[in-house]
Length: 263
Image (tube, rainbow, N blue to C red; front, side):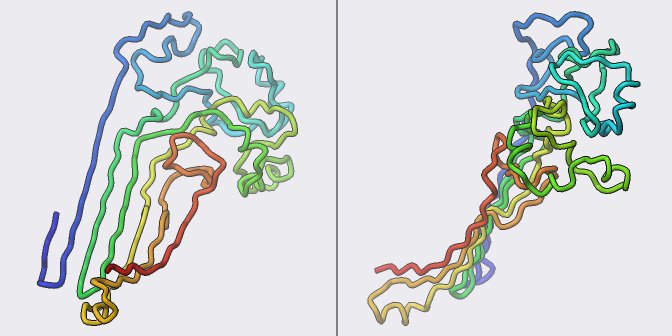
């Protein structure tokens, strides 16, 4: 879309949007035994469907609660107070791979969009770029850096004292060894939907009568920024929802300024 409101005022807008859903109708996979909560991992699900344990019931408060749960564990790890509670989906009183379930959306976005808008008026120009995607999740694995690359959410990790005081808890109990909470689960599966002001640039071009004095056809000053603002629902907000996988590399906000001289 381009609109000239007057001889020296112009707006140019480019919008794009795509929406797509998929389903694996058939995959040559053997069905899991009847005691599995979900018998298939591909057939009937979207490409990139995320799988993991359901941990929406909070944390174990004490060793007594763990002992009284009546559960045994076939995952090579046993829970401690402060670990995430994993649901026994098939009801056999054993936490193992038979309790793995589809969680969140797939890693393939259902909706993606972008909007680029440019405005110019009397030598001034402004351009902005928004982008985003919706209905998309991240993998359920609790990546190693979420335990050992310490960040602000670790400051509110579960401790018996913090739980007793009713304080805000944002992470399971920390551990120097492998934790029961590290199993791929809903706690570590992110909603990676986001809207981002990807870039913004403001510029000013000197009148031709001034630039022509040095033999230039155009002299333009500019200031721009990249990754200026992001609106998302990420639990661990030091990761970039735009990336296909989690990464320890922080989101960079970049600013540039300069001058373009054309001869």
